[in-house]
Length: 515
Image 1: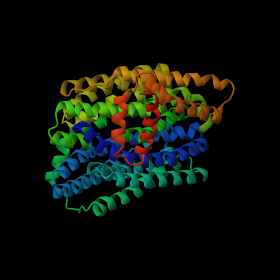
Image 2 (image 1 turned 180 degrees about the vertical axis):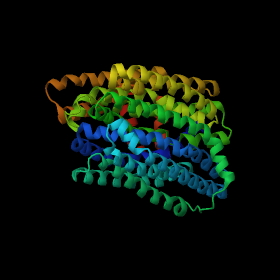
Image 3 (image 1 turned 60 degrees about the vertical axis):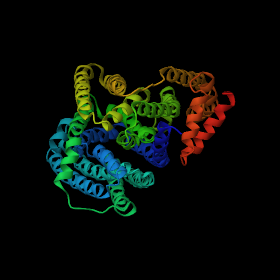
Image 4 (image 1 turned 90 degrees about the vertical axis):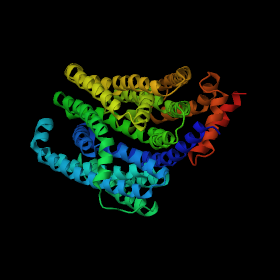
């Protein structure tokens, strides 16, 4: 097996454990998402969405890019057999996150009354902002140990803490929603889930993986900050730009409109839980590959395989969401979210468009191009902010959605893939991507007329079954997947638990017409 396939197998092997867990968490949180949004209604869900937007700003400031630093250095130290360095950088990162989290949360709670008055036009909603403060520090603590486990390559540990977090988040959100807690229900669900996941994560890191806590060291804190400072600034700029746009929109529209957009943004984060798992191991994998001095050709091929696998596996689901957004939204969330189908369609297409650029950005980070990433993100988000202030007053929700879900992913693709091409020999097989996209879209559009005969759940199930049966065959016949591609997927699947079996079924079925 050549180097690119070998390293690719390791990446997909770890990601498959994460994918398995995230399918479970997707189901649990999905049920909670549906029930909570139905109970709350657009207005209350809009309040929750705006509160989380503020949390996104303050959370990005507090975390300071520590997660990506842990991904990189834990993986490198482990690869080099430097266990004591792993102990010290993990302990130092935890201390850094605790201190920064307390500072950020304190500042956030001090201004909660003013924030409530500005966005909700009454200081009576300040208690929602106070509750979000607990969410911020809980998310930072949970994220720290999640990122350590990613760096260690411990897919099983990631799977367990992600499942625990999701279970408690979903259960408590549903219970509190039925008890009439309104917008506080999903917030307290998040808080409980993150803190449970944090404690379980500590157990896996310090007991299961054999690490030991150490006193924080300024040397390792400096190592973390020297790598993460540019990323932190980039993350802060991104968090501020995206969330300021939503908050700015809240000034012009009622919370009910924000609630419709919140359906799409929440659906986007849930879909990312599953789809991003295909690339979640890229940073530590490439850190190890670069330390091994793999050739530019090998690294470029690994990147190409990752993007191709993502497109083959996730394009069907995303285009399905885009085409059937109206029956999907009304069936799951209710007809009161009347504008959500438009936003869900834009969001689905945007995720698909942005996959290659997102993976390219991750590879650039692992290659040490953090200053370039910072410069590009500053430029991208500055343009986004300008567009928000120009187009939101005129176009409202649709203007925000087009900028956030479509324009920004396209711009990121253009910039990050272009930069990557200068460093590595990558081949993205755009011709095959176009063929796969055409096959997906054609099949889905063929099922649209069924909407005039049946609707709701029967329509969604019928279209899904018809698509699953025909997609693999047409993907091969159209040239979107050839014999060599099927062999590559089969090779990768042999070392992949859980998901590997499903991949082999896909390959064997598609291979019927590839001979």
